[in-house]
Image (cartoon, rainbow, N blue to C red):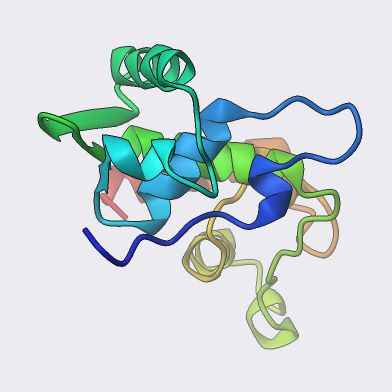
Length: 153
């Protein structure tokens, strides 16, 4: 494991009085690398203390966000990827979404809109579909999401 990608400084060295978000740091490392060794977290630039690393890796394994593939080697699970995206989007002040072009929005085929949004954005929230420029009402959104789930899309 020689080519480890480390997070940007704003993630592991928060500004001002903010506390380090160890869950976000660990998930960032695992999301952006195929796997990480224990030593990847304890070396510079992160230099996490052993007790802190042990505590948060145990917590993340318990929640099934992280998987221990062999002694000292860790990967992120699909649930962990979802959690990482939640943490990343909550840290961003103004999240930039890519919306379908007017050509697609011209017709009220909400299933096309939903699929377009999910394909072209890393992470979407329920509220993203309710806001402008989509403005899909709650019942139509629920109905179309359920239809897409039934079709396994």
